[in-house]
Image (cartoon, rainbow, N blue to C red):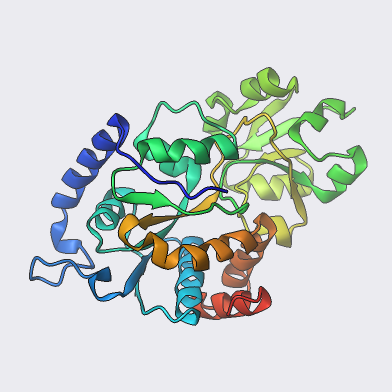
Length: 305
């Protein structure tokens, strides 16, 4: 994969203007503000790794941090910063150097009208919308996005690998998900238009996975990094036609330090798989391990420590 060098597009300018206003409204909550008006960051060679206030994102950020430290890089952690309107400006000004992101969601933050959907197209579109001074390194195959998921028993019975294979199922299909899925472009109508698959719909809400396991529905809208994919023995169906917006884990970095971190972080991305991310999330939610413990073991298991 290429390392994307970025340039500012009109959508990027608009997105950052909104982000800057949002940050200005809560400047006192900036976790990197030392009160002097100066930004902490990479001026002394330290790489500041940030994360969202989301356990899975923090695990990836901790993996980045420990991998860099194993490579002799001085690292500062600034986790649980918040959402994009808070941390994108910090990446721009160098207060934060590196952040684990999700390709599709990042693209839509800067370009709400994007038509890119597949992993390759989304990744290729990012250089045109990211603001000047930011870039993405290699994306991983791991993702955290909408999917259509079935039980392993159902997948085995009907030889299901992709969403398209659902057209060959000989029993009535019922799709479970939040109520709003019924009207989403990737809901029942999109499923029919893109893959020729007819489904009934059940608004299962918070019990979607439970209903899938119980057989109340036989297809469910589940996020691809949900730990229950492992614990409940579920199968995420591949989406070759891009019904869903692909959102692969991708490092976004301030360009000033990109060369310093690229080799180490790209090696992490090369090892981070969809199944691997689910397993990391299981260690957090089920085994109740800390992000530091999880990252240390993962790096050792993958020969990166």
